[in-house]
Length: 151
Image 1 (cartoon, one colour):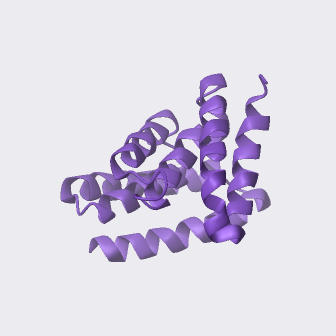
Image 2 (cartoon, rainbow, N blue to C red):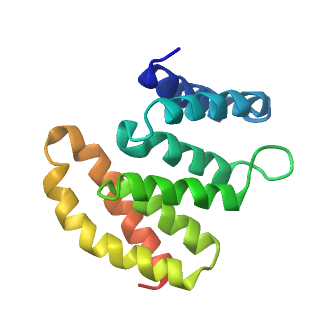
């Protein structure tokens, strides 16, 4: 009950199961949300603010009318993740994606500037073989999001 990682990774595993179950996954969304909220209450900084990051992504990607989709709640959690762990590239990339989706020019400009400054430093901090796969994803997303933002 008090294991942050247990709740966090259970929420992530439920999310992976939900990806393959499609419509049957709707019932799993509340369970994911519950475990991410518990992990967040226990340690909001765990896994580079992973609970807020995952809650933000859940609210950002879930359907609005038949599930928990809510762009305002998504932005709240994505901003929180970026505030708690600003050095973690995924937090900023997710926030940039949300600003692009919202067509928020100011938010896009702020996040693009932050990422330009952050990425060289992050490449030093998150280095080595254990981060290679993450960097492939981060670099690809940064290129795609930068192109989408017109930067």
